[in-house]
Image (cartoon, one colour):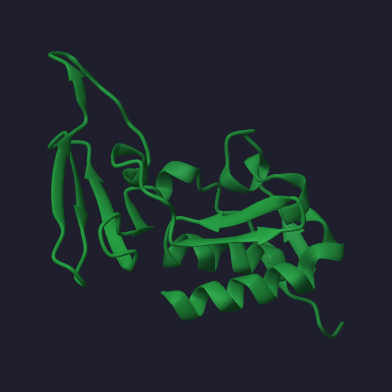
Length: 147
């Protein structure tokens, strides 16, 4: 069988990708990096273009922390996003984009031990539709050039 591209779900969740997020720098509008370290209870936003360097706590009280994607601590816009029809295609970082590309480009998609919590299972319907494959892969290609 030619042209068969297989994707095997690794049961990754969105949390596997959201500790390092490419964002739009709120100061210079260039690419910046937001990171979060839940053990240290700190989030960072660093821009190599303008030198912006922010730090904030993930702790909301003495014994509670909030585990959000790194961009959300700074209310930063995602760097890797593009409009798609009436929706928005987005990715946190290069590895997230690569994982989405593997899934979207696959003509055979295999899922093992469905948990209803994996990244692939939680994607909006338009990511799954074969009719959107070509258009989504074009978007991914453009976003890869921004990395």
